[in-house]
Amino acid sequence: MKALGFKIHKPKLHHSGFPGFQAEIMKIAIKAQLKADEKGRASPQLIIFSEVALKYSFNIAEGDVVRSIEQIQKCLPKDLWIGVAFSVFQLNGLEIPRNTGYIFDSQNLHLTPKRICTNFDEAMLENSFGRDYRVYGSKWNEDGSDLQQYGVKFPFLAAPNGKEVEIRVCFDITADPIVPSPGRISAVPAHKLSLQDSIKLSSRRDLIIINDHAPFGDAKGKAPSNVI
Image (cartoon, one colour):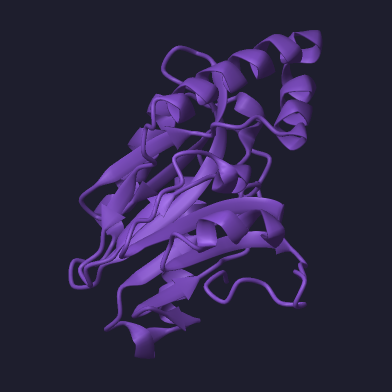
């Protein structure tokens, strides 16, 4: 798939069930995507995994994820820009459970906690922490509300074609700040996200790329033309 000068990949990768971050599995998936599309290697590449590809049930620490990404960065080709986006259910630096989005290329790495705790996130919390899940979910939403209230922007990578690629995890596609940003693309790791939720943001972005969305039809029977 190609859009706005990018070659776009949405690999199907499912959590293996083993503890620890599966850096080798992600490296294999990235290499497979590039090998399958060798003719398009002149274009910047975007690889977006779904929200449930590496969920881990909060049994992995942020530091372990970061160190694993650093291993992957060393393996990315030097003559081709590749941006990778995914999310993982982890313990952040304060040992607080969060669904956290990551976006990186060979030189840069950014992460952001998901701002809106959805029913899906609450189910993951309950499975891992039992009756304490409500406390964690409430704290999650309080922190996310603060980020929205103070207008904290979502992190992004600067691609060589002049575009900026930000990451928003699933329902954060509806989270503030939503402001016009010419030249910006939103990469959205998701799980059965309704494309209807993308309408507001789509009018303020050049392109929105979602891995794992539900079918959608608006009043005209079509999704926004810049959402794929």
